[in-house]
Length: 143
Image 1 (cartoon, rainbow, N blue to C red):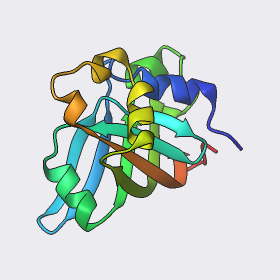
Image 2 (image 1 turned 90 degrees about the vertical axis):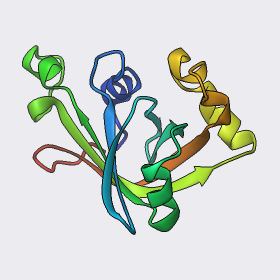
Image 3 (image 1 turned 120 degrees about the horizontal axis):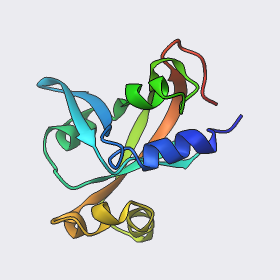
């Protein structure tokens, strides 16, 4: 089963909707949660984002690539625009960093314009998350 076009669009437009995705990672210094305004659904088995901050999340991914991503848009759910409880989606998987190369460059072209042209974006990395599972708030699969 595929990730629906609705979910793809919601994640792609999350920053515009004032509800960026949050990436949870864990490293030597413990857990970290950080906003990722560039998150996209790459395909049915992968999420991707542009890492330009290069701080705790990146350090954690280098130590432990296991991550969780949460999308939450309660307002859209209350308006009936999302047919999942609370407008919350959770994704779990393994991240892979692409610091250079054609695949890195390809991911950058797929992002929102604001992310492509943001200060420091050209120095960023593509991070691709191979999904183990994707679910709504009640634990029902999105795929």
